[in-house]
Figure 1 (tube, rainbow, N blue to C red):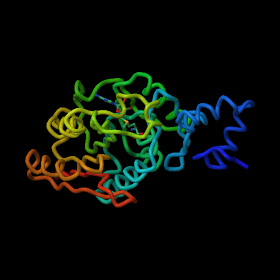
Figure 2: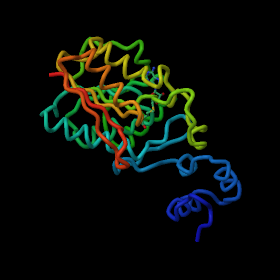
Figure 3: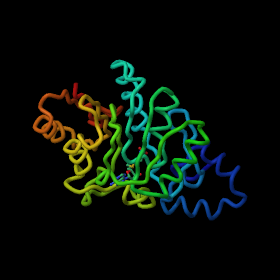
Figure 4: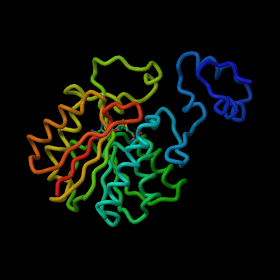
Length: 244
Ligand SMILES: C[S@@+](CC[C@H](N)C(=O)[O-])C[C@H]1O[C@@H](n2cnc3c(N)ncnc32)[C@H](O)[C@@H]1O
C-alpha cells in the first residue's frame, strides 16, 4: 500500500486524506521533512496536539516524563497545587497534566511567542485552562510561587550531531550552552525566584547528563533527594529533585 521509506501505513493514509497530490509531499519526506508537520498533529498521551514548524514535535519519551510526574504528584498528594512548566512548546506536557489531574493550577512559559500561540490553540481544542506566558525563564520570577516544576528544556550541546529531521524544528527548542546543562543549572540555582520552599522538579534530560546533574544538585541543594530515571531504551532520561 505504501512504499515511502520510514512512513507507516497509518501516516500514509492520513497524508492521502489531507493532500490530493502526494508527489510534492513525497519529495519533502525524501528531504527529511518530518511527517508530523505534514500531517499537522500528533497523539501525545492520547491527546491530539497540533504541530507545525513553530514548535518541537512532541517525543515519545516525553510521555513518560508526564506519566512519572503524575505518579509523583499523586504519591505526594500534590493534586491541588501550582505547577510551572518551562519551555511549553506545543503545550503537550501541560495539556496532558491538566487533563489527567484537572485540579492542578498550571502556568506554562515559553520564550517563543509563536509556540505560545500554538499551545493556546491546543489547550482550547483539548478543553483545558492553562495560564500561558511568553517569557524567558532567564527573566522569570513570580510573586505566587510554585510547588512543582516540569520541564523538557533545550538540552542538546551545540557540537552534537543530530537527526537530520530536527533541522526543521526551531533551534531555540533544541540547543543549550554549557554542554546542554544551562537550563537545568539555571532552574536549580534560581529556584527561589519561582518555587516554594518545598518543591519538586521533574526534568527530561539528555542521556549523558544524568551523572553531572546529580553531582550539581547534591552541591547546590544538599538537603534534597535527587534521582535519575531511565527511558524504555534503558538510557538516563529523566531527573527528579524533591526538596522537602
Ligand atoms: C525541547 S522543547 C520542549 C517543548 C515541549 N515542552 C515538549 O516537550 O515537546 C523546549 C522549549 O523551550 C523553549 N525555550 C527555549 N529557551 C527558553 C527560555 N529561555 N525560556 C523559556 N522557554 C524557552 C523553546 O521555545 C521550546 O518550545
